[in-house]
Image 1 (cartoon, helix red, strand yellow):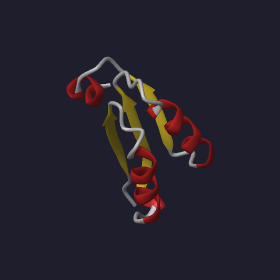
Image 2 (cartoon, helix red, strand yellow):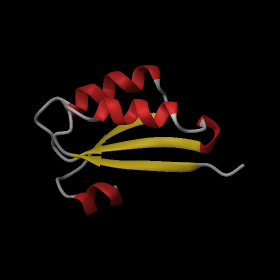
Image 3 (cartoon, one colour):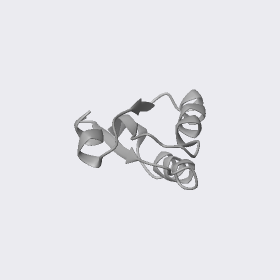
Image 4 (cartoon, helix red, strand yellow):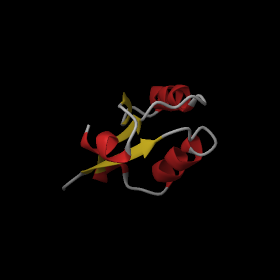
Length: 76
């Protein structure tokens, strides 16, 4: 079976990121997802900490840091 990587670029998404990650977790086949990369472009609202906490119980979620800019975040 093939699997995919999901890349989610974020910037100051503390209000939404946990709900999004929970939704993806509950509504997808875990065998189909290799990894979920949440690429933070320099958030100042605690988004990075939320992703870090979520990844402790969901090992496929990986938080990364990048310079600001969607293209830079996706390319990372």
